[in-house]
Length: 263
Image (cartoon, rainbow, N blue to C red; front, side):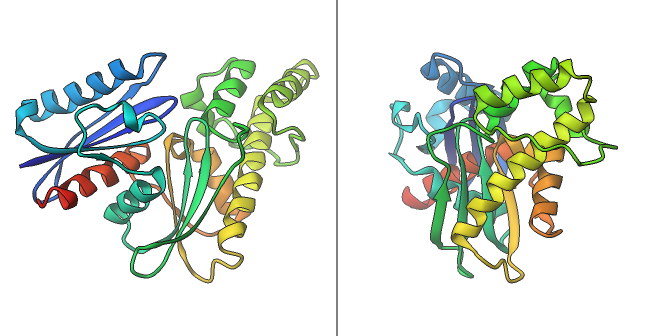
């Protein structure tokens, strides 16, 4: 039997297909766009094609993410907090603090030694420090967002971006460009601003990390510069990042599909 987890986010829709041994058979990450129903179908079809299976072989589907109720043939819909916690433990069972930064929100989840969620904190409605924030800054800098993770190398780390509002920060970045500020300094300032905001969330659930293992998920975890900045802001704590950080929520959903269907 096979189990499918789907995470419908604001920027991407992610799917993970596992078998009864919880082995990952296929993953998919597609842009959500304006029609999330089409993104759901595309992500589902991609993992089925990659694994050589047909939809009638699926024992259960569980959905998560802001568009989770749009998956019509689901067994159930589960919150992102639960799915991300479940998913990260499949990669790093020692995780006690999970930082998840997606397209339009960021959250920090605290787990106990048994892997249960004991607390969490989320950003406000503002998209500051999220994937959409980085997209806007990449546009302002006229660079590929996938390249931003390495653009801060060699920076002096002395620039502070004072605005975290996406609109005001974009204006600030444009002004810095006009003043001739090197791109690497601007990117470094943006990364440290995101890290500062993230650490404030961490402190809301864990005032002292006390040796806790810290992991990160979500599309922003692909940005090495942000991960490095968060690690430095946490005092040099190593931040664990799985190979496909944007699929952690879908992985958790797939595991829950197996559990709740009696697999």
